[in-house]
Image (tube, rainbow, N blue to C red; front, top):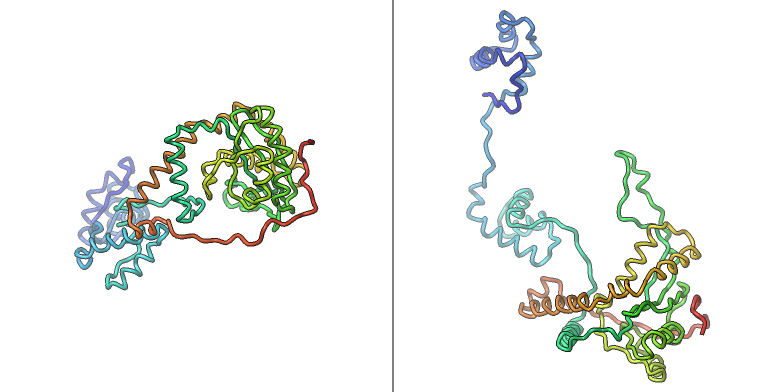
Length: 381
């Protein structure tokens, strides 16, 4: 039998197909067919006919793929098992599904599982990671979002502050290389890269002074209060006439008694920000933008890193800070979180665990230590 998959009708053999196929169906060998064709057209060679027969001749009728009869009655159970596996763990492999089904007495191939998985609408995508939140803090975040939505909070009197760490590295997301040449893909990476701690804040009226601290220094309560006194308070007096609230996370240096006593002395009020909520602070967008810009410069020493940080920070105009802090953007984040939390609350505890909302406990060990070193790169009093 012949399968004419991609035959070119302009080929010279096209004129002799009736003879070739007729003799072949009678069982004639290639030599006999070539002899008969050459009587009509001497330009057709033995190898032409042989290649033609090899390419288009098949000994069996092609069959379409089908579901084995032994599995037809088990397909609903297999689909339910696939759904259960991927609702419980979205990183389950097809082999894991095969092994689970085998323990239930169902034998199926990994390829068959992949076909069913695709038919059910599952597709492969990249995983995205976010911070894990303890159960008691989820309710605190929800109440914070609802309260600010009901009060139509504008956050115009707030200065959003936070620390971050910038280190020297050359990590890039992609590169272009010629096929077979793998050397350009290689990148050197230090085991313990040099780094700098930074502190800054933004508001509707611009940016604060930037504090840069050596990477080996831990920011304790005393150092943090010096940063606030030199970088934040002058900014609030100048741009907010002394009336502004500070937004900060609940790090030990921020919530210690020493820090709170200094805040009361300065008349500085802090917003009751929910714990484990960096996604609600727009200053994180600034740090992400800064690190992306610095990463592309391939910096090799701390001096250049410090210069790059200052240059990037100085590009933050009041207009750009306003874009980061737009009320609509903040309210959208609050609404999205509020909607998501309502959906999660309607589900059972088992479903919550399947979606990754598990308990996460951690312990903060130790307390802020007193260091003799003082911050560097702070503006003068």
